[in-house]
Amino acid sequence: MADGIEQVLADQPRPKLIYPFEQVANRLSKHGLSWVPLVNPYAIICLSFQRALYNRTTVVTGSCKTPAGQPACHPPTTPMLPNHGELWYLAVLAVVGLVSLVLLVGASRVFRRLEGDFAEEL
Image (cartoon, rainbow, N blue to C red; front, side, top):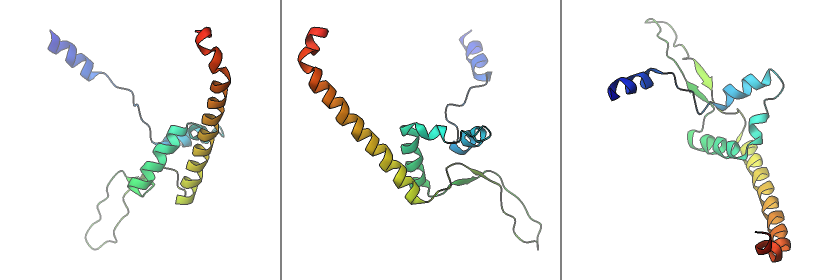
C-alpha cells in the first residue's frame, strides 16, 4: 500500500521553489515593478554570486541543427540574470552592506539603551 501512495505523490505536479530572476522580472515589468525582486537583500547576494561563478547572464536552452554546407545557427538562449556589468553588481552589494551596517549599529544602540530594563520586561 505504501508503494501506491508514493506513486500517487510522485505523479503530482510540484511547484517550483526557485525561479530564474529574469522570468520574474519580465512578468513584473508588465506592471512597472521589475525592481521588486531586488528589494530582497538575499536575492541580490545570490544574483551576485551566480554572476561571479557563471560569468554569463544567459543559458543555452535548446539546440539547432544545420544542414551540411549551411552557416552555423545560434542555439536559443534564455536570460537568467540581470544583464548588467560587474560594477552594477558591486554597487548593489555595497548598498546592501551599507544598509546592513546601519541597521546593525541602530539595533545595537537601541539594545544598549534598553539593556538595563531588559530582564525586568521579560
